[in-house]
Image (cartoon, rainbow, N blue to C red; front, side):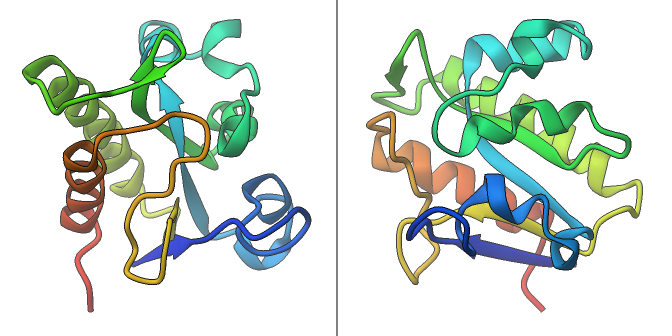
Length: 152
């Protein structure tokens, strides 16, 4: 399995999750999008909830694909109530850990060869375009993804 950082550089090309998820060459990929905590929790409570499956802005446009069979997308919270996480508090860490646990369960299915996430740069730092998210939160998310999908 491979962890793929993907930089958004325009619509209808690599980096645009809404475009990528429809391309046959990405059929083996699970896309991890930046979710808000409220919609992540709604989906976790009820995988068929409208709130948990409604398209969002930015890379969360692919939110409905987490309801596909097998799921093609998984959300990881980067904020709540329209605002990015300002610090890696215990409750923020728990929300992220809950998302990482759900991603691990999906990966255990064997349905994926790649995990694609939004990157800000060539170093693979988490890309966030809508919410301003604290650096320690972004590092924690990427570290968690790297733990699930080790290099090599």
